[in-house]
Image (cartoon, rainbow, N blue to C red):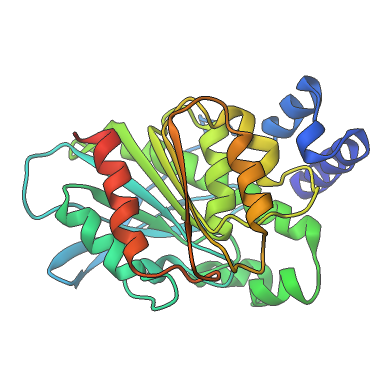
Length: 293
């Protein structure tokens, strides 16, 4: 039923206006898709642990809506005193939570290690239909789903579910004594960058955001540009590639300019969708500057 509800809302919004022209009422309707029942039990459990690069990662899982489970991992720094600030890590289409442990395309392992060294805890989830959640998409690869089959409504459902999952993950973090939920950072890559705009707009507990190689997504109602109006309250860093096939420099600049205020920065690298590894230091530095220093 919820998938049908989302499809109907998106159709209504789509005939109302493009992403950059949404009225206040249409935008409010769009944002309502990402609300959720906060009384629905999380039932979070730690199901194991593993060691990676000198850190211990807890494997967690909590209940999703629609009779599903949300798997993820969380790690805290080896030094410093709790409670720690935390960085939420959002992967791209076709990836999974493990890309933040080691991935040449995104240099995710280096980013995670840098964050832990600088005093951040880290948390990553599998987005809906990805990783351990492939069963909910009948094991159809999400990249094929988006780029070959063109299942737009299912893509919208995937983003909606994943954004709500991260909101519920924050609910879980508030129960932990070792996490300071007044200092929550967000780093999203590709589809994760798209979700970073949505999550940053609808979730007041996010304190600083880094959005990497954010796809343009055309004029669809839930494109990143639709949520730019609510991204000015907290510091925003956009890290983009000049040769990325998923947007032009003009589209990236338009998205950046649509974010109100001056607490923001846009950085272009001479790269495509895979940013050079130095972006990891800049992303970590942005969160450190705005949440620790």
